[in-house]
Length: 320
Image 1 (tube, rainbow, N blue to C red):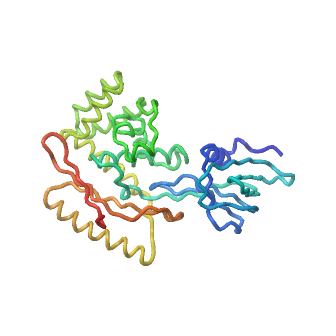
Image 2 (image 1 turned 90 degrees about the vertical axis):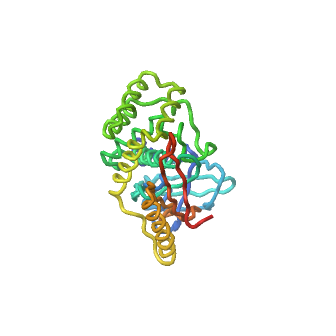
Image 3 (image 1 turned 30 degrees about the vertical axis):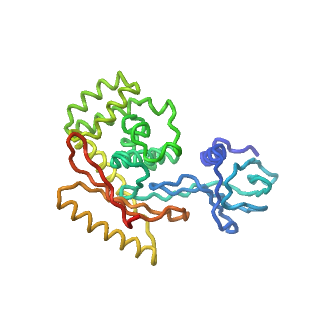
């Protein structure tokens, strides 16, 4: 029997293995074994080995580089042999499926890098939205998400200019500095919708002259008071698009604690709003299906008008 190498889920499996990623989730004796695929605030997804049996030793928490080989046995079953240093595990399975759970990411986020956190949060949301589109497919995104995801290829706002994670965790190659026509057109659309004629004119020039110097000059404009309307429109568009998906649900004392901290943050947000501040509340949440090491926090990202640029500060609950 010929392997179905053109099968989309097999291609996803090869993609993970090429990236040296292989994390199985227990239990391993149910006939369905889950392999972590794409995990972020927008989605928790898994490749599922169906009608599966695991033999040998699988090392949970293995931090080395696994070596894997996929075969077909005499009974027509797929055989995945995985080496983790000196141990070997083998998965026999009939097919692969994709298990996807989509979540509202417009209320979740992180404050990992200081300085204009509102723009870094926007970059983060666009990046995870684009990852969902690239790794899962267009069908997992709404029309609005597909449009916003084009901004992942708009260097004045992407990881080149406002990285949401420290540089050591994200490689920015030369291709990241090259804007796509779709990215520029999407930004022009939002600039026109926000009534930002100055930005529209600058985008026309940027379309033809988009070297790093011009990219950095355009990136600085998004900090300015005069361009706040388009930043606000972009953030609210992402929040609205994300709201189509369910929120993550937690139970018991964990949920009660999350609620108490959130209520404290919401009371503080109302005080700040009455004082004329713009405040976005974002929660740092753990995953539901995979218990990671992310601690629950609530961040208030606070804006106010400065002399020329917006002044942005962050308050975190519980306080650290």
